[in-house]
Amino acid sequence: MSQKEKLQAKLKENVELSALNTLCVSASARFYIDVTSLDDLRNALAWAQKNGHKTLVLGGGSNLVFAGEFRGLVMRMHIAERSWEQVDETGATLVLGAGENWHDSVLYAAGAGYRGIENLALIPGTAGAAPVQNIGAYGVELCDTLVSVTALDRESNELVCLENADCDFAYRDSLFKRSPGRYIITSIRLRLSRQQPLQLGYQDLKEYLADTASKDLDALTVAEAVMAVRHRKLPDPTILPNAGSFFKNPVVSREKFDELQVKYPDLVGYPKGGSVKLAAAWLIDQSGWKGYRNSRVGVHNRQALVLINHSGGTGQDVLELASQIRQSIHERFGVELEMEPGIVGG
Ligand SMILES: Cc1cc2nc3c(=O)[nH]c(=O)nc-3n(C[C@H](O)[C@H](O)[C@H](O)COP(=O)(O)OP(=O)(O)OC[C@H]3O[C@@H](n4cnc5c(N)ncnc54)[C@H](O)[C@@H]3O)c2cc1C
Image (tube, rainbow, N blue to C red; front, side, top):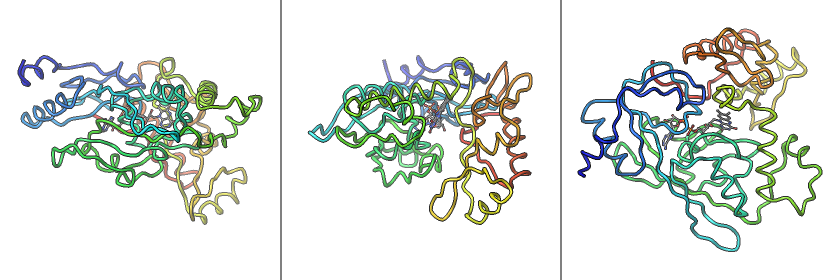
C-alpha cells in the first residue's frame, strides 16, 4: 500500500469527540486520524497542509475544552514505546512513546523499583502531553526527571531532540505550551533512580503513610498512596466528567498578599521567590462557588478547582461558568485566575 493509500484508509470524517475528552462535551472533528507511527504523523501533516486544514494533536483529552466543532484535522496520538536505556546501579532512563498512557507508565516504572514519578500517579492522559503543561502533583513535577523530548518541529519538518533546559519548564508551563502547534512530541526520556529519597512532604501523603514502616516504603507504595488520596479528593472523570484543576494557582506580589491578608487572615499563600502563590481553590471556595451547579454544569462539592459536566453540558456552558467564577474572584479579591485547560474549536 502506498503512503497515500495508507492515509486514505485511516482518515475519517465528522468524528464525534465526546468520548475522547474527559469533560465529555459534544464536539466534532471535520477530519480525524489515529496516529500510530512517525510515518502516520508526517503523512497526516502533509495532507493537512496540502488541503489547507489546521491541525490539533489530541492525547487523552483531559486538559482541553472543546468549545464547538474543530474544522480541521484532529490527530489522536497513539505512538507506543516503552524501553529502558542507560541502566546502571543508580537508575535507568525510561523512554516512552507519546501515545503511552501516563498513569500506566508510572505504575510500570514504580513496579520495576524506579523512583521519580510515583507522585504523578493517576494523572490522566498520555506521556506525550505530559511535558506540555509540565504535569505536577504532590510536590513533584515532570521536569524533575525529564531528560529530553523528541518532537517533530513543524517549522523545519525535522525530528528534534530538546534537552530539559531547552523546554523552558515552569509551573504548569513549557516551551510547548507557549509555541502551540510548533512541536509534536513523539517520545520522552525520563531519568529514574533506584535510590533517591521518596517525596513525602505533602500532609495528605504523610498521613496516609503514617503507619507504614520506612523499610516498607518504595515507589509503588507511594504511587498507591497517591492513588488512594486522589480517589478521596478528586472526582473520577468517568463518573463525573471533568478536566482536573480548571484554574492555575495565581501568583501575586508580596504587597498584594499582605494587603489581602489584612482583610482575609485565613488567606492561603506559599512564598515563591519574591512573590506569593495563592490557592485558587481557597479563593473560589470563599466566593461561595464550591458545590454550585446549574442544570448542566457545576463546581465539585469537595474540590472547588474542578468544574463538572453534570448533564449534557457543552464546552460553552463550562466556559461560561469559568468566566463567571473568574469575574467574581476579580471583583472580590482583585486577583486574575488563569485557566489551565486549552480551548479548542467553536
Ligand atoms: C481528573 C483529572 C486530574 C488531573 N490531575 C492533574 C494533576 O494532578 N496535575 C497536572 O499537571 N494535570 C492534571 N490534569 C490535567 C491533565 O491530565 C494533564 O495536563 C495531562 O498531561 C493531559 O494529557 P492528555 O493526553 O489528556 O492531553 P490533551 O488534553 O489531549 O492535550 C492537552 C494539550 O497538549 C497537546 N498535546 C497532546 N499531546 C501532544 C503531543 N504528543 N505533542 C504536542 N502536543 C500535544 C494538545 O494539543 C493540547 O494542547 C488532570 C486532569 C483530570 C481530568
